[in-house]
Image 1 (spheres, one colour):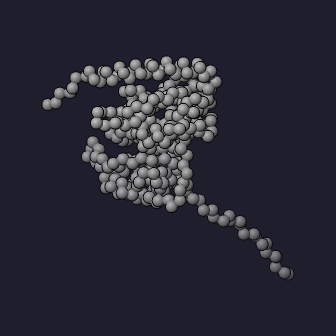
Image 2 (cartoon, rainbow, N blue to C red):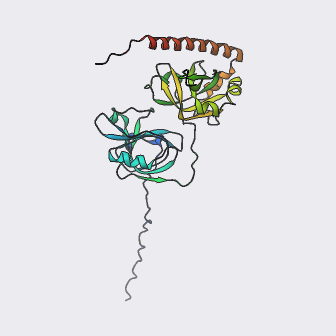
Image 3 (tube, rainbow, N blue to C red):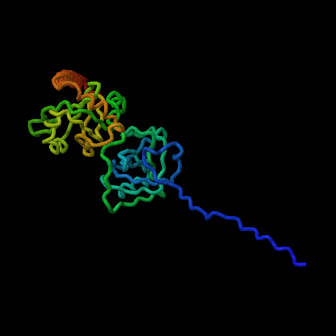
Length: 307
């Protein structure tokens, strides 16, 4: 009798192994608490501002920078001790780098530092952090993802850095600051930006930005154009902003109005020009009186006694 035929059992189908790659590239707006205390993240950013190597209150040397990513978001970076000298020689303002193996930390951990921008986290440059200079030019967005409201700007620390956007409603005459009989002074011009609530915020425009946009002030004011200005410094005493070397002016920025909260700003243009001009003139007079009062108070303060 013939033996029974053996049943052929098919081999189990095993799927091919899939290589899972951990995504370690981050944009500054994507940083969350779960990303902190891990020196494993990669960031592509432009060094927008680099400070000098300083000494902290605890006697540690440190280097502080402001970085700008491809989305226009900013974050400050920090390096301590010997790393401060290392990255000070390696990094140059205005150049774009790939930062490999950086960490993110809550800003509350470093309360002894003065932070220039309003952010929840800082980026730490560590001993294993690699920095690669990009050989090609990367076009970064000049407009940040969002702008602060006017009523929140002066809640921030004095001399900190912010961005502002509004309708160009006022352009003052050119003046010269720190003028003496032997020195012509620094040319400066005050401009006023207005939001949809009719609030004005004033900005001191200094030398290079003053002349770089010299042909655009009058037409922009006459047409009530939208103007975005990035990297301006807050002066809480005088209630105004001042330009820096790193400031950028963007006339009539072409961007997503919803993301940048421009709808309300454009609504300011719906008012009649004569009414807007009257409102702006009244605000300028009130500010001139306020600034004069503040300056007189400074002159009348008694000198500090030493010893």
